[in-house]
Image 1: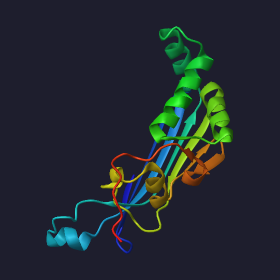
Image 2 (image 1 turned 180 degrees about the horizontal axis):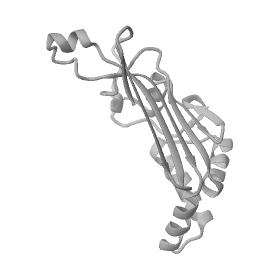
Image 3 (image 1 turned 135 degrees about the vertical axis):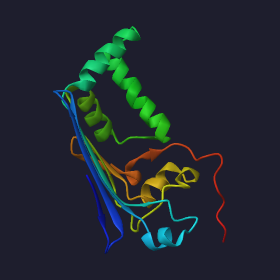
Image 4 (image 1 turned 30 degrees about the horizontal axis):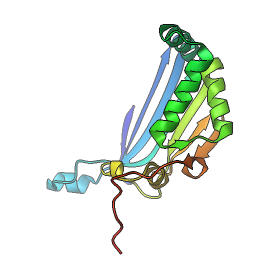
Length: 172
């Protein structure tokens, strides 16, 4: 579904997917676009800004099959594969997930459940340039929260391990 709301100058995009008994995904996003700039032919008018986003992934069997297959391929156990997956998420984030979240994610990987990601920035925010921010700062700017089987967390609950080497210096 795609809907444009002229008063707020926002597009609402929604889609829903389901694959038999494996998973379901629901995605809703609102993006602000300045139609006046587009009509005037402004050079920087084409980039939408995220006003809100919600992604809900409900696993009903896919991960359990994937875990068994990947563990077999790596001559490992499912538990070891899941532990390695959790460690990889932490490494990619640059921090350690709260223990309650890691435990719930382990349950999700084993038994299914839901992962929900929400963005609710204070004002509509373009994503270009976010790669220059620390992960924690980008999560805060975007108002990102994540929930695994209902256990919600945000950037302030992650134990951050390192700072980015190519950090931008603040101008004061």
